[in-house]
Every structure is written in C-alpha cells, then in structure tokens.
Image (cartoon, rainbow, N blue to C red; front, side, top):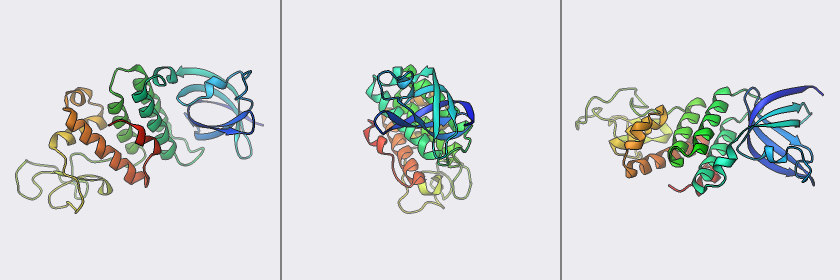
Length: 251
C-alpha cells in the first residue's frame, strides 16, 4: 500500500479490538485523518505514548480502504506534558481539540490554517504564560474566522455601518450583539433577543480576535467573563450544538 508522511496533532482516540486504537488526527497537509494504530495499547508498543491527545507528531502512514494505518510515529512537541497536569489548561485544551475536530468536518480536506492555529494555541497554552481561558477564547474566535464564521466587533454585522459616537440617536453606537447575525448590531438593525454587552467587553472581544494581548490583560475580570459567555454563545450557534468539553471549563 502507498506510504505517506505528515505532521499531525492527535485530536482523540478510540479503542479498537483488544490492542488497537483509531486515532483522529489533524494533519498539516491532509486535513483531518482517521487512522488505525495496531497494537498501540500493548505495553510493548513502540509508540503508544506518542499517540495520545495533544501530542504533536511526525507520522508515516499507509493508505487503507476505509482507514489509513500508522506505521511510524515520532514526537515533535509533547504538548501533553505542559497541559495534562493542570486542570484549567487541560479543560481549555480539550475544547480546542474538539473545536478543531468539528470545524474540519471533511476528511482528507487540507486545512493548513486550522492546523497552524491549533499548534500555536497549544504551544501558548502549554507554556503557561497566559490565562487558559483567554487563550481558549482567542483560539475559538480565530478558528471560527478561519472556518468562514468571522464575527464583527466594530461594523454592524447586518448593514455594515461603523459606530460614529456613543450618542442616543439610531445607528450612533453598536451596543447589541447577536450570534445568529454575526456580531454587533447598530440600533437600527438590532433584533429581539440580542445581548447588550458593555462597550469594554466588545473591545476585549476585538482584542482576543486580533491577538492584542496588552488590551486583553488590562481588561477587568467582569468584562473578560462577559466576553467568554459571548464567545461560547457564538460558537454554539454556528456549530449548531454546543461542545461537550466546554461544560468543564471554569469561566
């Protein structure tokens, strides 16, 4: 069978038979791939520990009829070492893996931007240099944007007008947020059920999307919490159902 090599992040694993596993991967060149790792659950396996969630690996695979087969695995970055021992990092990282799995829906469809975004997000998360919640929110907004669901935090998502002032006249400020319409709304375009977040929260959301960390780190905790709630609502709407792993993230 033809062989190929690729770089990958392990997203999840499932038991198969007595000693095998099905490994779901997000690869650099081939998108999402499901492959069988033979004998990986045996204690004598040569690369069992390299095929766990969060692992960044270099793989050799062979083409199969329904599932490919992993024949070699080398560790590139053991992200699990910096994530697995901390509850906040672990739960945030689990949401990142599940999000990548859901957003890259088609198997073997190249998605280089999603792959690079996930590797970068896990690297920052594992380093412990930033708050896990903030890293997660930034990753979710960026991954949604790459998938074609970019939210608007400045121009009205419905009519495209930019805010001009904080005055009370219609269209003067964009004080409403609606996930189903793609972001902030002006006074003219707002619809029933839209949230009305603080202006500072919208600033935080824009900074998370842009990676403007000084603005994020200077924000008040209440605005960060409100931003996290809006990110979760936006994600749930566009994925059509919530992420199971998000329930365990402390907000």
